[in-house]
Structure formats: C-alpha cells, structure tokens
Image (cartoon, rainbow, N blue to C red; front, side, top):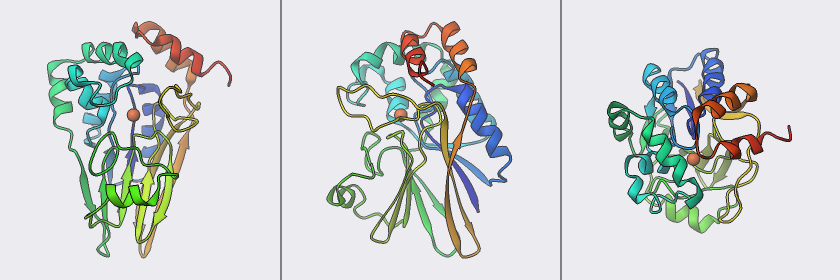
Length: 245
Ligand SMILES: [Fe+2]
C-alpha cells in the first residue's frame, strides 16, 4: 500500500496543483490531507474543490476549526495578526464548503499489512494545536502519545518535515504544501517561507516500510498573481516572503 500525505495547504492552490501533479506520477492508493486546508492563502475554494475531486480523507487542523468557529480563534491558537485573513478566507466559502470542512476527521487510522498501524492527525493525537518537532523533549512525546497502539505516526501543523524514531515509534511530519517554514514558529517571531511545497509518501513494499519526504517546486509568480487579485488582507506578507529567492 502506498499513501500520499499532504498537509497545511493554507489556501495555496498553486502549490497544491504542483504537488497533485507529482502525486499523479507516483501510483498512490490513497490521498490523506492532515489539516489546515484553508485560511491564510488566496484560493481556499479551489483547494476544497481539489480535495473533494481527489476523494481525499481530510483531517481537521486548527485553522479549519477556527474557520468554522472564528469567534473561538484564539483558543485554536490563531495568531492575532492572522485573524483578518481567517475571516477573509471564511467569507470566500459557501455553506457547502463549510459543511465539508465540518466533516473532516480528528484522526485517521491506517492498517498496513504485517500488522503495522499508522495514526494520522494534525498536531498530535490529542490536540490540533500540539507542536511536535525534532527537538520536542522525549517526556512530552511520551505524554502526547500515551496509550496509542500505532507504531507509525504522521502529522502536520509545524510546517516542517520530520522523521524521528523514539523507542518503537516512528514520528513523521509531512511538512507543508502551501507554507513550508524555514524555522519552527515561536511566539513573537513571524515565520518565513521556503519557495517550495513539501509532502510525504509512505509505503509498505514487501517487508520494507519507507517514508519518502518530497519537495516540489511551484511557480511563485502564479501564486503572487493570485494573491494580488484576491484582496487578501495579508497580501503584503506573501510578497515579502519571496523577495529574496
Ligand atoms: Fe498550519
């Protein structure tokens, strides 16, 4: 079985299109989106249409939760300066789009052969806002994953690809399609973006389990054209990201 995991698209349809074009060449059995499909980027509707068209299993991210309930956005850890973009993104969506987001699952278990169980989620299996990094202390990992029976875990949220083994558990992060961060987000330090999209393919081929961390370059000019014509309140931020390429 071969599964593509995409995450944190954040309304960047230009990046998603490039990633989906690559996935088409990869002979995958299933597409799983690990959350934060919408909010921040210029084309949230197009992103949702593509997820529906691909029949993707989509997991709920904190930005998806905040899009459904913007009055609770601080609880979902949406940074204050991003709130106008969150409301703008919500205003682009139809009632059907919002219903579709409310159907996103909190976690998804995938059973590979050889009794290998994988658990997919956004932040951690417990919360969409938990940040799991290569530097997260082992005690915190033990707390976040306590009682889990899976041996392979994959999430998003940090916007940084990761492969980390701890005991008999493998922790993966698919990275971000629409907002690949240079460094992990810390409060007070706005993230800066890398000019590519990231995603992962996991497959079990005979007796070999593989995690393929993929990087896909996309057309920045096309993205910036979409940002410019969108009327997104945070348009300037997107332009600043790609000044030094
Ligand atoms: Fe995100």
